Image (spheres, rainbow, N blue to C red):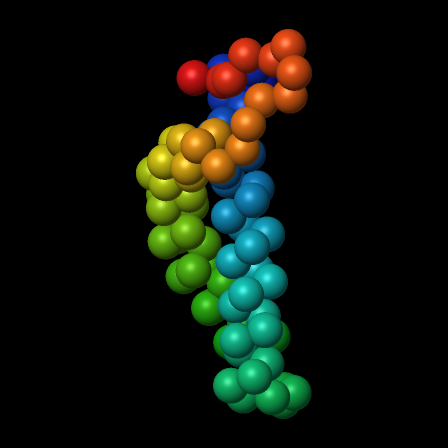
Length: 82
């Protein structure tokens, strides 16, 4: 188990991996269709996308949190997160 301080990093790693897997899979299938090489093409596209997605997720997560906080209001008795 990792210490709790690694939670944001692990969250970004898993989220970027799953999202890039899904998006690259859809894009690869739309581009080449079902053919024998689709799996290897998909994996290559996924690894490339994940290498880009992971650092981007880590960089934009704080900005995204601030945007979300500005778009929602706290429930009664709850302080607005910083």
